[in-house]
Each structure stands twice: as structure tokens, then as C-alpha cells.
Length: 245
Image (tube, rainbow, N blue to C red; front, side, top):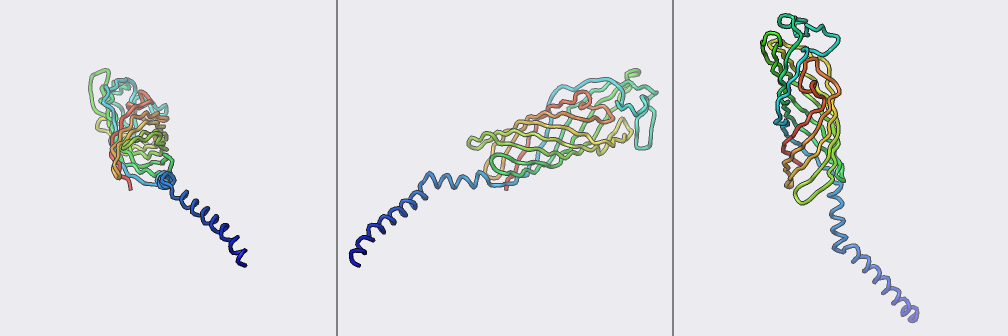
């Protein structure tokens, strides 16, 4: 029995040594750092942003009828009171389209590994100065649009307190109110667009300032001519602040 006990002692010591080595391996500094980083990398955070967008470019000039739709008579346009005839029956106008302005709120949900899904509400103001080509009579045109965007973002580079990311998605907009001179115009169709952007934001633990140069391609048109009608490709620069929790 004594001999058996002596033989068992080395085996017990070897087992204890292996257990100690496993414990040390589990608590190595590099391993602990890696494990503490992994939950942060896949942590699903939510952020809310407020922004304004536009681009200080030259005004766009175009000419044409007040409505490009084939279903509308060349010298008529739909208004809130029905159909009214354009000034003196002329259907040719000169437009000076001002740069569209947008303001909105966004909500972003992170899904780990730099990916996030973003949506919100976007208000856009489309303004144009209109002049009747035959008599130089002028008036203004305004459209108030409300849109719902949806896009996917990817944070592809992080250095210190700033990150770079790419985004792609689309937006659907509804015209809330449209005025051609003093007349209200019925804009019943939805306007669809695709968006791609490059973004950079500088952040603290909870707050980030960001800017996003982007490009939008409009798949559909409004009845009234706007800057989006002249060119379906529009550039913009978005500036905003984002709160993360």
C-alpha cells in the first residue's frame, strides 16, 4: 500500500502541474486582451443622428414645359383646384434650379464587424425660379419632399478617434406640398432613388461628428421640373452629429 501511494504521488504532481499550466495559459495578458476585445467587436450599439445636407454649387439653368408627363396637356398643369391654363397658354419656361437642401434624423443599428443598418426621415426643399420665355414674367416654384431612406454601412478603417465607412442603399420620397407660382400642384407619384456615399466621423465615447460626401441617382421624376429632372445624378455633402448608446 505504501509503495502504491509513493507511485501515485508523481502522477498527482504531474496532473497538478498540467492544470496550473492550463490556468496560466488562460490568463496570459495577450489572451485576456483578445477576449476583452471580442465582445466590443460584435457589440450591437444603436445611434441617433441629426444632419443637414446640400452642396454650394452653381445654380442649374434649364428650359422646357412645366410638366414632362405625356399624360398632361402641354399648356396645362394639375393644381389643387383641378386643371388651370398656364400664363397666356405658353408651355415654354426658363428655369433656374437652386441647390436642394435636406434636413433629417437617422437611426443606425450596428451588427458587429463594422456593419450597420440605417434608416430615418429626410425633409428636402426643392426651389426654382421660373420665367416665361415669351414675356419675361417670373415666379417661383417650390416642392417640399419627405423621404424614408434605408442603407447598409461598412466601417472599413478605424484609427484612434476616427473611422472611415462606405454606405449604399435607397430612398423613397413623397411630395407634401408643391407650388408653381401661387398655384398648388398635385404631385401624387412617389420618387425613388439610389444612394452611395463615403463617410468619416470623429467620435468620443458617446458623441460623433461626421460628414458624408455622396451621390444619388433618381429613378423617377416629379411632374414639375426640378434640379433632379435636369440631371438624375445629384451630388451632396451631409454634415451631422450622432449620439451612441
